[in-house]
Amino acid sequence: MAILSTIGKKTVGTSAVQLTANTPAATMAMKSGIVLTVPAANTGLCYWGPSTVTTATGFPIINTVQIAPAEFDYIGDIYFISDTASQTVCFDIVGQTVTIS
Image 1 (cartoon, rainbow, N blue to C red):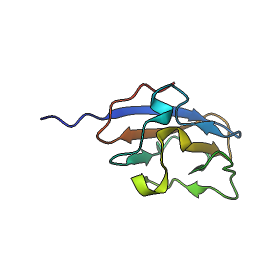
Image 2 (image 1 turned 60 degrees about the vertical axis):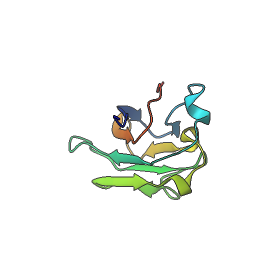
Image 3 (image 1 turned 30 degrees about the vertical axis):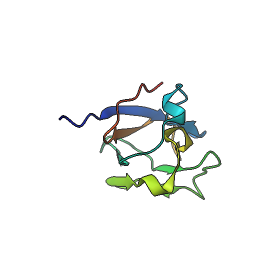
Image 4 (image 1 turned 90 degrees about the vertical axis):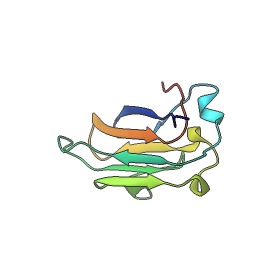
C-alpha cells in the first residue's frame, strides 16, 4: 500500500495566509504531520502558527520544521507569515492527499 502525500508550496507575505482554505482539506484532521521547508532563495524569514500568527508570535521556519498532529486539529488551522513580501514555504502533508488553494 502506498502512502500518499501532498507536496506543494505557498507564497507568503507580510499578512498571515492560511495553508489551505479548500473544503474539505481545511477541515481535514491532521494525521501524520506536515514537513515545512524554505528555499535558500528566500530573502526573509517565514513563520508558522495559528490564524493570529505574527512575526513576533510565530514559530520561525529555519531549514526544515515538522508539525506534529498534536499541535493542530485541522490542516486549515495552520497559517504562515513573513517579514518580507513574496517568500515561499514548501510543504509535504505526510500520509494525506489534499487539494491546496
